[in-house]
Amino acid sequence: MTTQPLKYEVVIYWSNGDNAFVAEMPELPGCMADGDTPQAALEEIQTIAEEWINTALELGRLIPEPKGRLLSSR
Image (tube, rainbow, N blue to C red; front, side, top):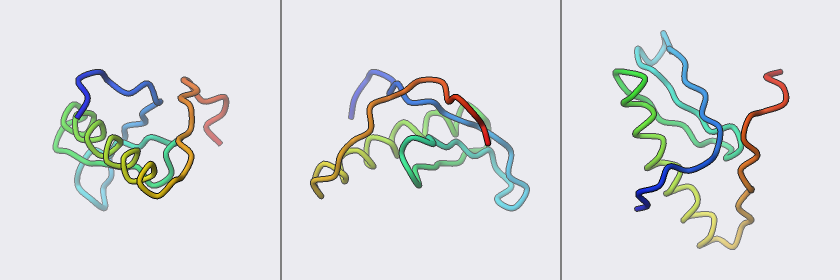
């Protein structure tokens, strides 16, 4: 596990269906985590993203370079 935050954009929002805050890394498809607070979701997404990257590496898949801020939210 890395101690440096990953440099991918994170989107955090409240989900009524999950009754939790959800954090997503749009550049890593399917990479999502939740938590009782925005900070908890942000901390959890770090761990999930590391697992996403490790799994992709094991499968020989390309890891997207962090782009930073998304150009559009559409």
